[in-house]
Image (cartoon, rainbow, N blue to C red):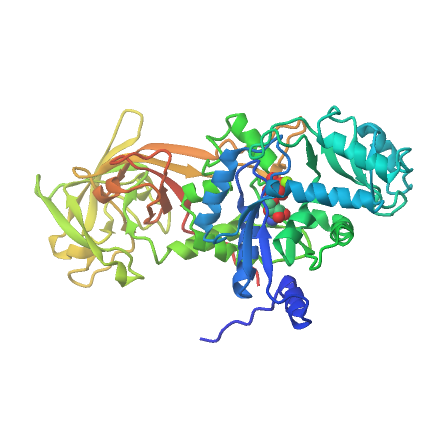
Length: 554
Ligand code: ATP
Ligand code: MG
C-alpha cells in the first residue's frame, strides 16, 4: 500500500529549522496544567501534541503543574491529571515538576529585575491600575510610583514577601512601556500579595507570581525549548520574550501558539463543566456525556481513538470547531476490529417457536467478530422462547420491510430460519408475544435448499438471558439552539440520557467488567460503566452507534 504523505505541521517546520540552525541540540516540550479541574479533550490534544513531538525528535517531555495560583488548586486534581495523562500513554518518565518548587528562583528573578531598574513596587489599587492602563486606542499613564528608587523597591518587595502588607495593597510591576500598542506590555503586574495557604508550599509564601511572569521562568529553568500554548497567548509572547531576556537565560525557550480544539455540541471549558457538575445536570466530572478525559474513558473511548482523533484534527493557527462526529468516527474505527460482536436486545418483545422442544437449550457457534477471525468463536444458548427487538416485528409492514411480519420468513442470526405464524396483543393493542415455527434444517442460519430470506435479526434466549440496564446518550448541548439561553442558563438537551432497564443480553455479557467494551450487533458499541457496574451486574452505556453519515475531511 502506498504511504500517504502527510505534510509536516507548522510546529514541526519551526523545530526542523531550529535544529538545522543549531539553535538547540535536543528539544524539550512540556504540558503545563493548572491543577484546578479535570483534563478534557482539548488538553488531550495538547498532551499528545507535546508528547508526540518529544518522541518524534528524540527529545524530552515534561509534566509540570502550573500551581502558582492557590485559590482554585487542589491535590485531588494533581492526582487525577497524572492518572489521565498516564492513561493517554504520554510518559513523562522522571520529568515531573511543580512550578511552586521554583518560587525561590522566581523571587530572585524579580529582585534581579528591580536591581536593573526594570521592576517597581506599585501602590495603586487594582481598579486604579486598570484606569491607568489606557485602552486599545489610547496609551496608558505612568504610575506615580514608577520612579521609586531601586533601594526603596528592594526594601518594599522584601517587606511584601515578609507579610507586612495586606492583600491588594501593593504589587510588583515590570517597568516596560505604558504607551506600548500591546496592552500586555504596559507595566504588567508580576507579583501580587495573597495571604493564602498553598497546597504544596503551605504558608511559606504570601506573594505569588502572575502567570505571564512565572511561565517563561518555569520553561527556562527546565530547559524547555518549544513552549507550545494556545492562541489566546499570542499577544503575551512579547512579554514572555521580555521576561526571559531581562532575567537573562542563556538558552531562552520559544513560545509557539496553536489553535484550541473546540468540538461541536459539547462543552470543554473547565468553568462550564464545573457548573454542570455543581448544578447536578451530570453525575460528576466523569459523566459519560462530558468530554473530560475521565468521562471519555468511562464512556469507553480508547487512548488509540483519541490519538487518531488528534492526528486527524491536525494543528492549525486558526480557531475552528471540529464536528463531534469526527471523534465518533475514530472510536468506531478503533473498536470495529477489536471488539466482540454480541447480541443484546434493548427493547424486547417475546418470540416463541411453537415447533421447538419445550425445555431444550442448544448452543450455536457464533464468530466473535466476522471481520477478525483471531477473536475466535463462542457458543450462545438458544431455546424455544427468545427476545427480539420490538422494532423487528410489524403487524402490517411497509414496503421494503424485510424483518418479521405474519407469514414472512427471516433468519435468526447464526441460528435458524423462522417463519412468523401469528402474534398476541394486550387490551391496549401492544404486541405481547410473537409466534413462529423454525426449520430444523437451517441450523447456523444457513439455507437448507437455496431458498432466500431477506431479513436477519438478532435474538437472546429468554431462559439464560442476562437482564440488565443499558444507557443511551445524546449530545448534552443542543448547539442548533446555541450553548446558552438568553437568561444565561445552558441549553441542555433533555434527551441526553435514556435509561433502559429491562434489556436482555447473552449470558456472557453478565460477566463483563468495568471498561469492557463490545459491539452489540445492530445497536452500536457499548462499554461497561465503571461507576455504575458491580460484579455480575454490569451497566452498559453506548459509546457510539454503528452508522454515521460522517466523512473524514481531506
Ligand atoms: P480551560 O480554559 O479549558 O479550562 P485551561 O487553558 O485553563 O483550560 P490549563 O490547565 O491552564 O487549562 O491548560 C493546560 C494546557 O492545555 C495549556 O497549555 C493550554 O493551552 C492547553 N489547552 C487548554 N485547553 C485547550 C484546548 N481546548 N485545546 C488545546 N489545548 C488546550
Ligand atoms: Mg487556565
